[in-house]
Each structure stands twice: as C-alpha cells, then as structure tokens.
Length: 321
Image (cartoon, rainbow, N blue to C red; front, side):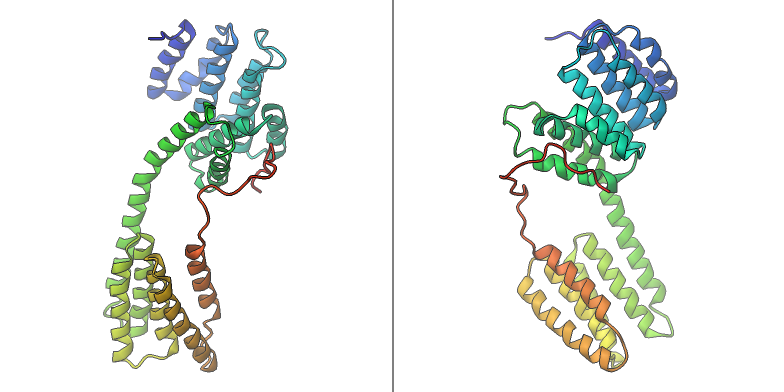
C-alpha cells in the first residue's frame, strides 16, 4: 500500500479543516506553499488550490496569485507535464473569472494534444458546476466526451474523466428529480387553480402547460391523459382551431417522447391543418407550430453518442462565447 508523502498528509489535514472553515483553510495555503519541495508537491498543491479557491470559494485573484507562484518555484523545470497542468488550472480559473482572452493564453501554454485538452475540458466542467454555472459547464463536458474517443485507451485521463463524470451524475440526479417534482407539482397546481375559471379557455391552456410539465418529467402517458381532458373541453364548448391545435400539439409531443414518430407525424399533420384554419380565422399559430417542429426534430435526430471526428482534431477547441 502506497503511503502518502508528508506533504500529502499536510494537505489531507488541511482538507479536514476546510470542511469547518474553508476560508481559513485557504488562507493557510501561503504557509503550505513554503513546504513544497518537488514537482509532485506542486501538482497536488495547485489542484487543491484550484478546487478550494476557485470551485468552492470563488477567490479568483488569491488563487491566481498562488498558481503563478507555483510557476516560479525553483523545483519546476521549464518544460514539464506539471507546468502544463498548472497553466491548465490557471485557464480554468480565468474562465470562471470571465477572462476569456487570458484563459486562451494559458490554454496555449498548457495544452499540447487531445489528452491535455480532455483534462482541461473535464476540469472546466467540474469547476463551473461547483460554481453553480451548469449552462457554461455543458459545452466543456461535451468537448471532453468527444476527446475521450481519440486519446489512447491506456491514458489515465480516461479514468480521471470517468471519475469527474460520475461525480457530476451523483450531484445532478437528485437536483434533476427535485426539478421534475417541482415542474409536475406546479403544473398540477396551475390546472387545479383554473378548473373553475369562468373562462374555460384558461383551464384549457393550463392543461396544455401541465402536460408539457409531465413531458419534461418523462411521463408521456400522463401527458396523453391530459390530452383527453383537453379534448373533452373542446367537445363541450365547441372549440375553435386554436384550442384544438394545442391538444394536437401536446399529443404530438407525447408520442414523439414515446418514440412513436409515425403517430406523432399524424398529430403533426393535424396541427398543420389547424394552423391554416387558425390563420384564416385571425388566430396566428405559426410560432407555436414552429416550436413544435423543432421539439420533434430534436428527438428524431439519431446522432451517435460520440461524434465522428476521424479527421483532424483541433488541439484547442474555441471557447464557448
């Protein structure tokens, strides 16, 4: 069994302190830096400083100062994988600090091939998610996914990326389940609040939004039952094309989610006919129909999990704008 070095044990003790007072632990990193004596120490120090100072605390200026001190350490040669790793850590920090141009400069110093870029992309995704910026993290996670197919099969970056991705799944799953519950409960509340409305169209529109909420929760069967409620209202009040369009719209979405694209196509055709009728009666439905078409098309696209990048792979992909 490999025992941790004295410096690694020091970082482990600091990690325990960080659970109680992360800022106080971070403030001790100046002291800890003075105990670094090798490239390995600098690697562990830079990773810890990035995770705590950037991911957990958002102390970008302080963390940047520490990482730049690492680059000046006498134990760090001019050309080494550890130096590249510190430059990548700086690039991650600068992306989080919204200093894109400076980040690109560090990327050029820290990335010399797909393996380095995969490390950088997965670290960016992990750190941005730690900062509660999931929409910014997503492009980097997608990039790491692509790069996993071109790095050598024995490259340890694959284990690193798998570990990060597994952690992200564990973090995201409960949040996703909670969001689904919030969506469906809000949809149910909306329908319940409008069921006794003097204007039946208000309840009809609420049912449509309720059905969409259940589709986002991946429950097309429940959405189809709501379609039946909408159609019952339409029959009772002799609805015009606009209301009938929205029940067909929800039915089309539900069948597409189920993967029943032929059935969805029939519902789509009904929607297109109702759009024409709505336009003739002064009820514009074009934008809603276009939104439906985009929704179905996004589900129909059968893209491979790993895109084909058999041609040249750029060493540094453009940063998301």
